[in-house]
Length: 234
Image: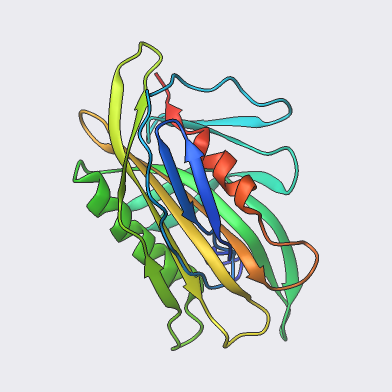
């Protein structure tokens, strides 16, 4: 990923399952590249917001209209995380950082956050944000990462009152082999729900390969579990 002082990023590959969706992908780090692939989606009866997992922290962003949970280890809350495309990310978290390079930089193993975007097609929006995040998090100087973006998969989540909210989930991966300090592969998952007056966006990104042995990259199950906890706030 990019330096934690400037941009965020990470590298990873995962398969997501949550609510009505099943998706595979990877996440990004503060100075790392990534790459993506999307698995077939499955459809089932939408479920209401999940009960908080034991030990997990629930983050809520009224601007995005989304709440989601983060694991009790490896992730630290960060209220403001900058901008990706048209979205100002807030109520997010950073995955454990490491230092590398001369001069020494602090590099994140992952980042997540949510925000609001003007109402648009959820799939198109998710693809655009995934592309922007991969470029922002994984470019090394003038060298661009190899980016792969899977097809948008339709998703649904129910409000607390039981009303279904449509959306989309996109997985992207980015790979780089230019900077030895960075992860060699990262994944970006973009989850979008379409509300009446805006689109709510959750971006989850983390290292999935390369970089130091400690802190280790994220795992499929870790990233999958985070996206599965995303639901409307009301």
